[in-house]
Length: 451
Image 1 (cartoon, one colour):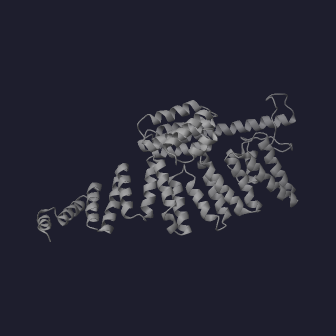
Image 2: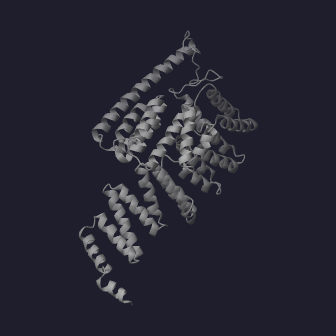
């Protein structure tokens, strides 16, 4: 050993003493994440990888528990450098990023894992992982679409339909319809001539706004029913197709078969016109909304009265529910309020959803998700300007990072396009594409809108 080396050994910092000192401090304060993180770094320098990784994992848990999400994310990223194949840590990181509203980062981590380490898992392990990721990333269709990719080669078509059904709403909401359509076409190819599987495909095409494809599949199912001389089924298909032609939004019904569709049409709150006449629940209103009541008109009035009574009962029950929520939960449980807002939105109770999202947006880590959902609800109510104002205010608030700002701008462009303001949408998609060329489908959207 050189003289300099001997000098360093004698008088330099003693790693063993540092480790021993930190271990004593950790034993005295086991819930101090900073101490555990420091101890982990010392252990890793000494190539005690297993022990160091364990200490990092504990530090990450403690940071998250104490509300220091940013530090927890940093520790989890650091941990993955040493234990890159740790699936549980990957899942925790993605979930934590999503809960912080960093959906862009969460999706990047998820896609990175899906395109890399996921190949080391069995198909069952992949499905389990992707299912858990679907819970962490409810706004992304990708986890369910990856499940479809696994199920199709196994010809598990019923399970694949279920995954496609779960993926359709987030695909539409996020604007990721292109990838969804790709998986739906793959499913059609796998289904072949199976009418049982072509039927839900038609309804799924309608749900993503492709009415022509949906009608094509409905006609294929009708041809099969005609060939089988199944007159009842043909009549059912005709009744559904007639209702669609007369303005019924079958996509919003969220059904996968003609039986379900007929049940929806028979509900008093969703009357639909029919060419066949004479069937309860399929009464055509007068074209001008008025006119003299006939015998059929009496049935319409009775139906309307019953519907009004049902609506009153629903409002009464809703009022009691909200009072109970305010009493037992209050306004401080922001996460429960956020989830309640989502439930209201799915039930079509938009006014109630608005209230819950406004409350949830008070919490920093929920602000991004709650505000974008708030904007969606406003747009559904027809108040696009207020929706855009909410998104602009969020971008200018300084409460979200650059990734979050990019996600919000993309969301704004989607709303602009849906509102028919295609020039503004195209300009925004083009700007995002210039700044982040590989981000989602911005380039394709900009080109499609003429930019």
